[in-house]
Length: 520
Image (cartoon, rainbow, N blue to C red; front, side, top):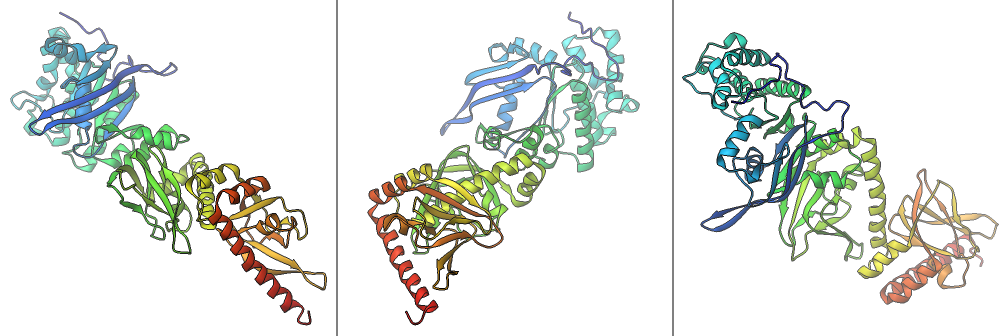
């Protein structure tokens, strides 16, 4: 007969507390695959899942119905076994245990709390809590009643000990179930929708009890559909279509704290798109932020000529939608699934995205940095829609971002021509020498327009002065003379486009000179 030697005081023993120590891995799933055989063929419920939980962690497992969260929990509790892979709990490879060994391990090491309590109606509250000790013989008979009463004191139900379950409320019955789960002082508590049948106030009190148990050293995993409560838990494991999806959130936004990651993960919703389907369309209102967890998508912009220009490709682990949410409120590009592909993404609504960037300076800076990069890609596509994909990528690699303060001169008329520029953000003023010796503004250049081509293609000197206009910075992409020459040499359509723009500007400049000096 085994005997527990830990304290049975009204607080949980600190055996799993890691204060001041390195985290100790308690639960580990390695490449767990679970396939169920059905009349229609094999159904894969878990797809090579890796998961690590440290001792003393409080973890929420969330996901839609059929996502695989119950199968994941069944792997941890030993109720089910993996088709392939390993499940190791407290250094015990439970996937290798036979049925008798599994039952003995579960009775010692695991406490399970169900949605509908599972209390025996013919036993009193006290007897229900004593039952696991009697079944597993973990405490001597003369200690069991005292320990059960102490556990009921922990859950504030010592005064209900001699009542039958039917005589107490649902919330109280769940507290009894928690006390029963603690009876053999297990390493891990697992709650399968433990608040699913409770009202919000009672559910909140149960979660507070879990928080207390974790603070006293217990490891608690809770399956829940309540995203608000899940958002309070320090770590959220989001499972979708048999895969753990929150890892993609961490990879996409690596500067988030663990608490921020948990809050964001608890608010994400999975969405799926088929071949050729549009996810967001340029000009539409921006309402969601997206993280791709499977598949790829192409990014397009609408050029004023009516041509749709591909400016990028997004892959698993990348995100999009931040530009419309952070600037302007409308989509700046169209994102579409390839005709031969599919895509699964996690979406975060505007309200929770705004909270994320408001509460995390590091994440906001990360998003702003990527926004600047994507704005450059979009404006290159606007300016030079005839570039082939490889030429487009080469230009992005060769170009450098250069920023000018309001009023700062980019270059002056008659200076040597050494670079080509595309306006990414802000405005550029075009100035020309006038007979009186003054410079006069002849036009403005907006985002998506380019300048500097005339001096590079004809004469080698600048035909006008360019300076940053307005009250905002002028952000440009700068391409050296050598890279510009290579670009127009490799793309006849782009060279023709630039030549046409040069002719148009020459006509405008000639008209401007004539208007400023009617006698010339």
